[in-house]
Length: 164
Image (cartoon, rainbow, N blue to C red; front, side, top):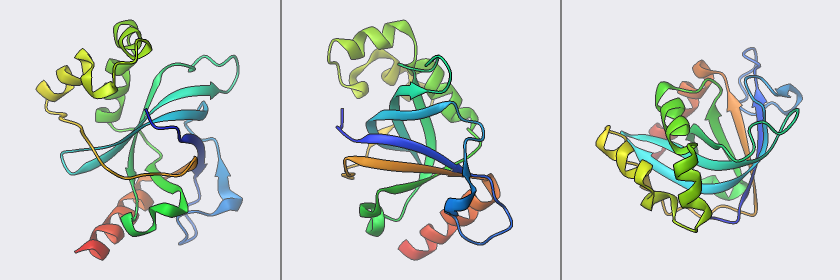
């Protein structure tokens, strides 16, 4: 597991062109505040950020669960330590999170088994979600800024165009 700490923030603003409008950061659709990074993974041309929740709103009810976000980022600018995420979790994200948050997987992770070597990770591959770790190093603290789907798709397209 990576030593990076994830801090979650969200931008529900659709009126401005900026993807990260700090004045619009809120907590839409999110109970998670911080998490430990497992890594960035690629499957079916989508990047997923996997992390273990360390702090959530309220009574920390999400603590210990695996948070999964579809993300997009500029590989040239990843050193800024801001990763853009889709504000609305996809079915893929929900399935990965549910499957990796079981007691059995938690027990494997608690013994030091890397997430890629858990039985659940292998089961996900058989279901068509063959998650491949990406060799992208992130800083000690990473902000994951969720944006609304229309803006996320626009950002993702913009990044894809830049890398072609």
